[in-house]
Amino acid sequence: MRLPWKKASVDKDADLQAEDYSMKLKPHNSIEAAVEDPVDEDETPFEKSFEDAMKESFDISGRSRSSSYDPNDPDKEYVPPRKMSWWMLTMLMCGYMVGIGVLSIPSAFQTLGWVGGIFVLTGAYFITTATGYFLYYMGLRYPTVRSYASMSRRLWGKPGMYFTAFIAYSYFFALLTSDLLTSSLTWKNMLQKEHICTVAFAAIAYAMMLLAGQARSLFEITYIILVAITFIVIPIILVCVRSPVIGAGLAKTYASSSASFYEGLTASMDIIFAFTGHLIYFEFMAELKRVEDFPLALWLSQTFSYACYLTLSAVAYYYLGNTGKMKSPVTLVIKHGALHYVNDVFMVIHVTIAGTIGGNVLSRAVQWGFQPLIAGGLRKFRDGSIRNRLWWLLWTGLTYGGAFLVAELIPFFSSFIGIMTSLFSSFLTFMVPSAFYFWEFWHETRWYQKLLPFFCFLVGFLMLTLGSYGTFKSLIVAIENTGKPFSCHRKF
Image (cartoon, rainbow, N blue to C red):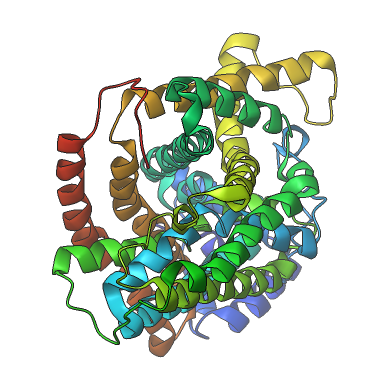
């Protein structure tokens, strides 16, 4: 394939500018060979799309354009505008990451021990930060890209787009279904004395998510995301405060672990799942005023999440470890009294708000896929008319409704999400960002600069293969011990 900058130019000034840019990023001998090498008259569609992408992403002098500059973006009138500041993005990322996943980490520490738990948690923190940087570099190069799927199309054409889109949006749907199921089961746990069917609580959770999901952009969700952060941090604090009393000084902790290979894998995947927010990073950058501010939000959100995870895990394991009272999620250790109800109410509100972040992205994908087929096209995003909002209500209703049906039709969905985590989260969090970086910057980096993305890709591959073994085994156990579809007796 002939790269766009190899095409001979008829403008002498443009040639000189292209040569200056090439000398900065490419070997010195590349530009001479490029100018002398003739170009075929018939370019392939992939070459043309690549050339268009490069023209969008860089100005004539080779200096990377501002991330908010996208005059050649044909879709900018139909997507949310860039209005988000770095501190808004930080809150949004914290609210999305510090979710219900944090509540399973103390049980993982009990399985892995101090050394194993801290090692996996710290390793996940640094590796996911590195892969977040890989996506940031790709966002700088292609500022009009808004999803994993569109980035895959830039690099690998339509086959890559379809493959990545299937995995990415399937995972978004699984997370949305998991949030809806968690919310409904929390309602049941809170009102278990009322003998109300779980399906009714699922309908309530669906209605709450649908209402919160009427925010049409991630920027609009930032106005309520602080509530979600507060309502997950408070249960963490309550568990830390109550753990010494519940443990009653009977806890036993160990530096190492005697867990089986299967148990260790499952526990490790629980920790890694808590850091899997990368799937939505391109959508975040697409609404950010300056993509150059993304690393600041990335470091702040990653560090905040790591601090919350480590604090809760250390306190809960120290006071509840091996007492028989450790639960997953850990908030279940508070079984009675006012704190029990406070925890459950806060959990419902947090899951409802945080779930709308992924729900917003998934609903927009559904809208872009089906509205042109029905209405003949899309309406501009700035159109705030009742008709446009009714269209959004339709697509969010169908998206959340599909999640409701799947959550009720699959009794063992809580274990099924474990398979989705091992198969998709490791692939989307470790492997895909590393593959993006390898493909785009292979010729612009030295050999030692390729070691980190290679290591991240290898970790993702190991999690994908080994983690699948553990979760498939747990799925078999879950199928044998769960009820029927639309059962009123679902449990955590």
